Amino acid sequence: MEKWARSLLLLTLSLLIIFASVAADDYVRPKPREALQFPWERKSSSQPEQVHISLAGDKHMRVTWVTSDKSSPSFVEYGTSPGKYSYLGQGESTSYSYIMYRSGKIHHTVIGPLEADTLYYYRCGGAGPEFHLKTPPAHFPITFAVAGDLGQTGWTKSTLDHIDQCKYAVHLLPGDLSYADYMQHKWDTFGELVQPLASVRPWMVTQGNHEKENIPFIVDEFVSFNSRWKMPYEESGSNSNLYYSFEVAGVHAIMLGSYTDYDRYSDQYRWLKADLAKVDRERTPWLIVLFHVPWYNSNDAHQHEGDDMMAEMEPLLYASGVDIVFTGHVHAYERTKRVNNGKSDPCGPIHITIGDGGNREGLARKYKDPSPEWSVFREASFGHGELQMVNSSHALWTWHRNDDDEPTRSDEVWLNSLVNSGCLKKRHEELRKMLLEP
Image (tube, rainbow, N blue to C red; front, side):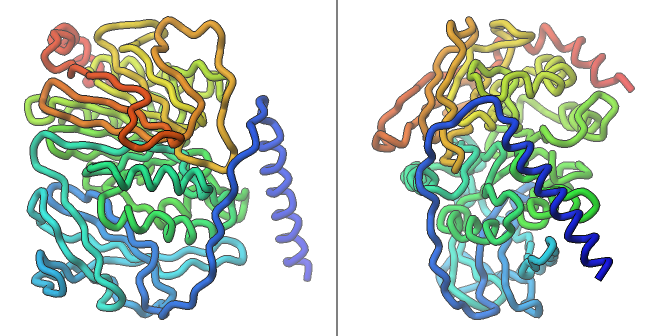
């Protein structure tokens, strides 16, 4: 009885901490759109649910799904014709507990090598329906869909419907996926919500603050996120699922963690230096970075929250010639000029805040007035972005608000890669010294 009382006290204290942190927000969001309702349906215990795919190293994909049957096998059958599976991938599984919640069996299976720009048909664990996936192209052009801070509201559904109309190859998500916020069944409903898209095109994600579901002395942080959304961190030489990189069709993408150590003595910083040292701009002329908390933000919401990470990492990203930085967290859209050290710089990256996927907290409508000189376009609307890498030097970025048809481009700009700008040559020695620092 005493043990139960102690557990109840710890849970109560943890909930008080959570509610206090929510109440500490210093801005008021407008009324959000309705939450989606998910009718309960009985499925076979071996039926694959929450199916999604992600890139897993060169020419490989990771297929993830959940079953309630703990004895279900972790293999994927696949081939290039419907119902004809010429190949078999064996995988692994995990599960986790969260107070009274027990997850299903979470399967992760890597398949490949796969041909580029090819349609594959696959089945998970020898049961359930057949799925299909499309591998990204090996060369330009390639299109990315970009949307963060998704959640599970009517706005989320609208965003996903728009993305589904986009002819994209990979989805990039800079944090805040399910907005489960300690209610673990909402991770399950989120998995079902995104399955129609995430089972067909790879989703590459990083963590946001809403993934940080730790309860002191009871549950470690990120256990839900790390168990369900395994990314290619091992394939990219990282020791943590919270930061990793991948390459696809001439693009080197780096996914960083805003909520894990990032100072110059941290594992993440050391990994970032090692990863940047491997970048070959002849093979991958475009270099993009994603993380959750923006460094350049003219919205009243979440001011200065990224300052510490910016102070540590911006010099390294600048010296490396990063082209574009995508972030979320602020529930609005903003695009900057090329910028560095707080001001416009033709050799700096363009920063795009796109935390407008459809979360339940609503939009952050209030901006600083006047806007900073580095801010080009800003708007508090839900939507998504599309990044089309046309070739090694030119890309087209468009942002689409949900209030319009998907073909309507609310913001549009042609971007030039830094690879042929002279900026990289100018900073080569600076970068070399930074990478050699202990």
